[in-house]
Amino acid sequence: MQELKADNPHMIKFTAVLPKGDKVSRLAAVTPTMEQGKVFLPAEAPWLRTLMEELVTFPFASFDDQVDSISQFMNWHKNQNTVKVMRLTGL
Image (cartoon, rainbow, N blue to C red):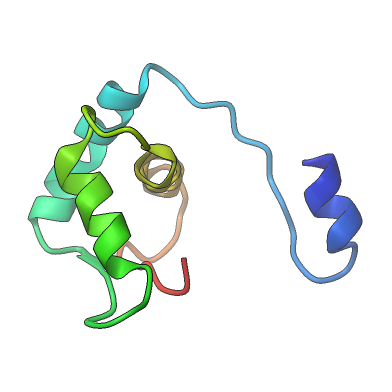
């Protein structure tokens, strides 16, 4: 958080969120939202294949940072008073 704030003092507001539960539980809590088609990814992006491989092989993949950060955001977002459609772009 300190590095993000130092690098972007006026650009972006950051909020620290402590994750609850383990990575598998966090993803399980938002999987229905994904299955309902409420999460949008671009049709083409240089990082898309890597992200999709990580998503479909979780929790057995070597890397899971993207999956975990997405699930943490989605869990946080569920508890906000905002529009309930998420567009994940530019990851």
